[in-house]
Image 1: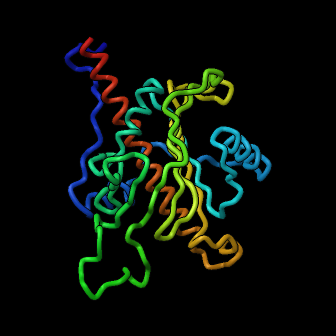
Image 2: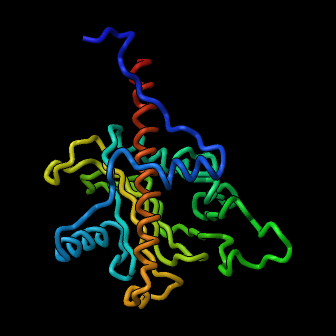
Image 3: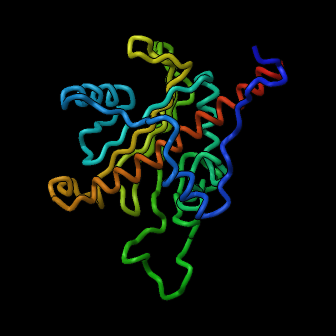
Length: 247
């Protein structure tokens, strides 16, 4: 047995200090746990989509790209949710040097995601970036922030749900946390779920074109989202360990 002096202790996520470390941490790094929810059949995905719609009141079938990610976290639901609502440009769990979180008026209801932190293009002659209007990359307006679960909600669910406009995606973004459901094979204390649904420039028929653009962006979103969730898990479990150790 290990002595108490040699017990392995958890560590917080490393802090990125620039574009290079953001690229390494969120794009090139292979996440410790795979988080993308995969479906064996179209029917299974449709059933899951119906579950999403029932819980947050949004029809995910409207979007040509729908990425659903999930990770188990050994921390109470309320604690994980408190980490979610602290989401800001100072977060170690988000690539803020690539896509900075700017809470307008320090308000969680309205958020801008700024490419490279730019609030305006760095040169006077620039009216776009490589021909794309990307400032802001996203505008997020809260549809609903569910801080307290409903009395009849046995899953103890809380979430942030946003409508996204601007830049390339138009759709929804949600960060959702609930208690684990043993019948679904979930064993951790909580389940953290992130869903992104959008159509490129609002064009639902892009999914019918063989340009490969959807697949490229799905790959980028999936890698970044998986790293974000893994870092959130690491942060929550590290802090819970500190609390337990100091009791």
